[in-house]
Length: 303
Ligand code: FE2
Image 1 (spheres, rainbow, N blue to C red):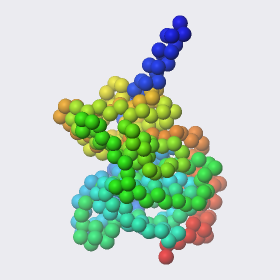
Image 2: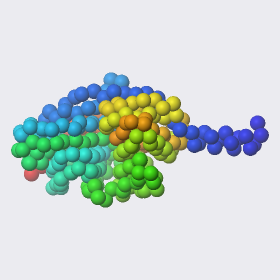
Image 3: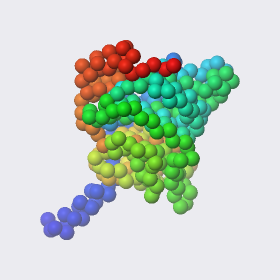
Image 4: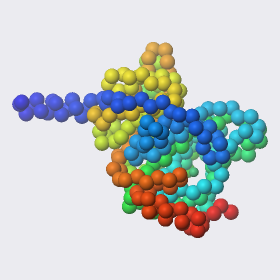
């Protein structure tokens, strides 16, 4: 092979669109005090997408007065919880005295680190009068050396999160982490992560550059799209897992259907994962220590 052929070959590989490794349909389950979620992982068919540990989709529902439920006081250690709301408001309070409201389009990126006790509840109005609720929670693992860092919050209101739009108006991307179509996120992540919410009108094609090293998936919030270089179809509540065989991810829509989709990608940690409920560490003995610290009140209490 001539050297110019080599260059050509490398170029083709580096710009190649990834293929699809699998489609996972989420399961219906309950979280916290009993609110319904759709969960593509962790499930029997997919335990994690390193560094992502969990994706919960609080599906769009209209709740009757008194029906809204949340997650009362509970601890976390060793990872980050990311909440992204689309409809309704969640009130957050924690053992360090922080509190806030997460509303439509807002993101809360909480680094639990060594440990927090917090509550995540629908606001009083939603509990009392009922209303719409729709959102996501994603758990992002922390590398071993950062599992016990001090907790940190990034509460980012919707208006501070950059939006990228294609010239023809067919593609809208909210850039929560990483970058897309020339816009860069304001949220700071501990390890390299891309988190996008994309909306595609009919007949659109999004080609998002993502490092080949990043594990990448898309989750269809609503609609139907065609994914990867073989245009594999996926629809509402399905997760599309991409192979690490190209430097771009392509998503397109048919002529008559729109698509709303989350795209998540991250550099894998490649470390052992020991998880028990709200604690995610590297070893079983670290889990036992987390339980002891929580029970002894060393992660604090909510006043
Ligand atoms: Fe939580």
